[in-house]
Length: 61
Image (cartoon, rainbow, N blue to C red; front, side, top):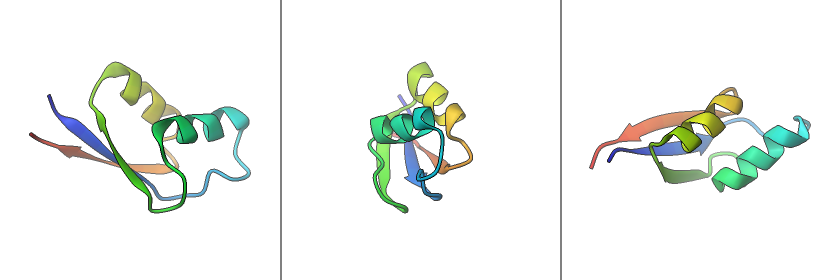
């Protein structure tokens, strides 16, 4: 299964509370922090909600 590398490129401060919670739930804290998550529907949905704040790369196994 492919995985996604998600990097926070814009701050979540001064954003809607729901967007801040999604960024925190993804495991992102500071700008330029990255996490690797499985490529599934739940992760894709969370990324869709904060697409303007993150950069996504696909990592193949």
